[in-house]
Image 1 (cartoon, each protein chain N blue to C red):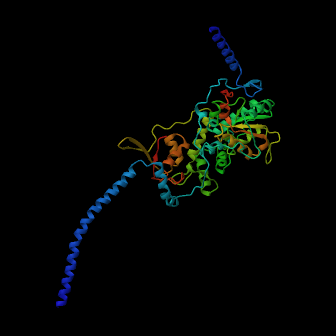
Image 2: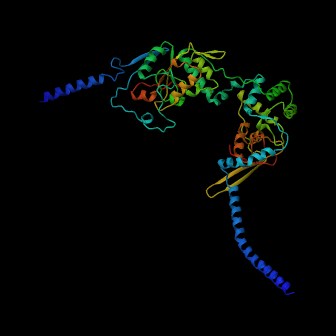
Image 3: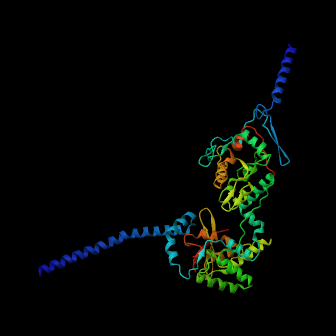
Length: 209
Length: 283
């Protein structure tokens, strides 16, 4: 009797620890992903607490629209929609070999509260034609100034995100880039943004001050 | 005979009737006067009460136009340039780069954000791009005129005459706030702004508001709930809105505060008139 109960407890413990050891993985075949960016190791994994829920700003369901309206997955013709796995793949391929840039299109105060690892903050407003220094940013993205605009043949691939499906910052960044002549084929749009990223318990980082 | 007596009698009756009726008219008129008095007082109250911004704006739509058209004096041609830009361009023309002033960068949120973006991208791509911010250069005829005069080492009085002659001849346009109440160009404020910017660029202190501005009239308005202090200034001959701003706030750019508070009587910053009473809001 006591022996039997002890056995059950032992079995339960074994199973329990097995569950704990079996991580909340990214996919069936990958627990996490490590990328080296500019000599820095970035690891993207998921929160292991299976009871974790979101709270606070990114748990809201019904922000007022207008202002926070549902955003298109494809903000402009020719732009490729992306999800979390595509973002991770973009980090592994394009960013690691310097052919792409993961762009956080939110204003700096959002970015500084937490962002996707490896992302660079390019607030949507700086991409707008109203920014007198817009051309400088286009040059940094690999566009070459010509007599009548820019040559984008060596421009970087871009993955762009904002706060989430209700946030227009990513959408506006994509549209501003295309208005400036950036080829849509080079742009991927992660509409899910930080909200979907957090909803899957994925790693975020606080940018260095 | 009888006819004329009857006619006279009828006339007398009509006259009496008229006389009798008049006092009753007066009687009716008395409460009417009372009403008038009430209305007048109500209006007086409205005038004395602090006028809200919206009320001022609504009024200005009605009152402005005729005043603007009847503004006397020489018409100094104005443009929409700001004093800061004008002063910066003049300094650039003298070979002094105001752009190196770190405060100037901080004042431009777009430049600040762009600089952050560029260093962020550069850290990842190694592709360093610096902001090729538009360098200030003298562009307007006024700026070029002043740069030339300053290079020649001319004194303030000479520059004042030079600028005013050019303005009268219509060969230059000036920022609106440089137009004085008697239709001249306030070169004193222009030159003072240039010196201020150069001082700040060289790491000097920004100017502070004078302790006791001259010619100010302070009125205390007491209301049921609060006591508020209002400052007024009566425009003197030779005043420009820019000069009044310097006098009260220590910096020319704050003219916007005065302009906004006086929209009901001031149609545009270059339209101030001698004797005009301006409300001076707190900074």
